[in-house]
Length: 157
Image 1: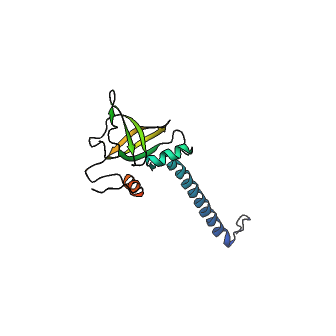
Image 2 (image 1 turned 135 degrees about the vertical axis):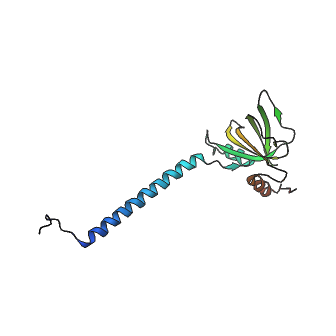
Image 3 (image 1 turned 90 degrees about the horizontal axis):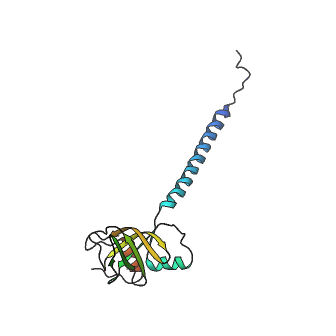
């Protein structure tokens, strides 16, 4: 019998399997890289006010980059405007940063308490789209606690 002139070699099957595995691994690596770029655009990092202002002065903050700034709501700075507009300053006891927000603040939001504002840094002012406040007497966002400990300002209750 004739096999139509096709000669099969024993290593052909192994070589083909290796090529398929290599192609699959390359496709998987490419998918991981693309997913990493997609997640990078959506990751929001916490920044204390001092670090945010330093990065802004150095030109390290890209326009339109979504950020989180956290610290304590500075005493005597909370002002309620028209409708649901508010302004306050967030501090890490080293630097304070003005924050504007339009919306309903959490019930537990008040001066002297921990807060994380998520939004955009625009012309020296932080425009928040979301405000996160403490949940109970002992809660403070971990990033705020770490920043206060780093600056030697941490005062546990």
